[in-house]
Amino acid sequence: MGTPAEALRKLGYPATRGRGEILRILTESPIPLSSKEILDRFPPPRPDASTVYRNLSLLASLGLVRSVALHERSRRYEVASDGAHRHRVVCRECGRIASFEPRRCDLSRFEADIRSTLGYDVKDHSLEFFGACPDCRRTENGR
Amino acid sequence: MGTPAEALRKLGYPATRGRGEILRILTESPIPLSSKEILDRFPPPRPDASTVYRNLSLLASLGLVRSVALHERSRRYEVASDGAHRHRVVCRECGRIASFEPRRCDLSRFEADIRSTLGYDVKDHSLEFFGACPDCRRTENGR
DNA sequence: CCTCGTTTTGCAAGTATATTGCAAATGCAA
DNA sequence: TTGCATTTGCAATATACTTGCAAAACGAGG
Ligand SMILES: [Mn+2]
Ligand SMILES: [Mn+2]
Ligand SMILES: [Zn+2]
Ligand SMILES: [Zn+2]
Image (cartoon, rainbow over all chains, first blue to last red; front, top):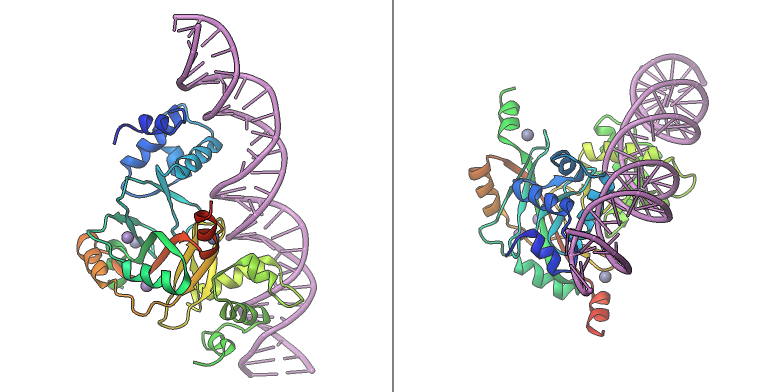
């Protein structure tokens, strides 16, 4: 749907270098990244951390990126490619994260129930799985 | 399964007042609470915040409470009643949280796929819905 | 390509949440 | 009740994020 720069300008915001890089970095990552990880991947000159935070907030409010809540101290972010969404799998031992796009994700039963019993209009969801990654599984079994 | 105090002692940990209160407070709350909210509900004398953090970590490591990741600055906690688990619904406008116990939660299809394509052994999951609560919906429509 | 008003950025300071060392207080088994 | 292991309060520290402000970058218009 056009370059990131176009998307931004269409929404009325200058397409600065920092914003372009954040979108590129997130697009290239198979898993959601923290603001620190994003900063670490910036080609020099690196922006200030506050700039990254400000831009992540802006991009999230515009719907171009999405924040992901794993059970960590810091927030993570991923690109919000139109329509598509992802689920994550986190290893409880080593923290390794995997991310996948569900073939089909039918939670409409849940959403209907929520609508009728709680009155919320559900627009979105977030589904994470926790367990043991291949490496940690091997270690656990072998003991 | 006995009182919280018994559960703790059975696991080899002293059942201090703070631990009992945390479990009681979380049991009485319909939604997961942050450490600050827990502290605010403590009958005097209130423990130090660090004590609450330490106890939440302990209780979580023992499987008596579970941490919940909504997209917030702070972690939330709920009691981990054996087997049962809960899902949450969060209002994107006002932050209001609802929590419910799913009638049946069959994500085994997902878990099988994850097993075969990513190699993770899934033990647990966390499912959150985001949208508009009844109050905020009314406001939005009326504009 | 230059000019100028607007928006963003870097920097420093501030806030909120969570973690840790240590000595005093508490829990609990004997 | 005593004694010892564990927990607690307190103060210091760490980390993630936020904010005010002046300088720099952006980009619409000329
Ligand atoms: Mn889904
Ligand atoms: Mn479930
Ligand atoms: Zn692992
Ligand atoms: Zn609301």
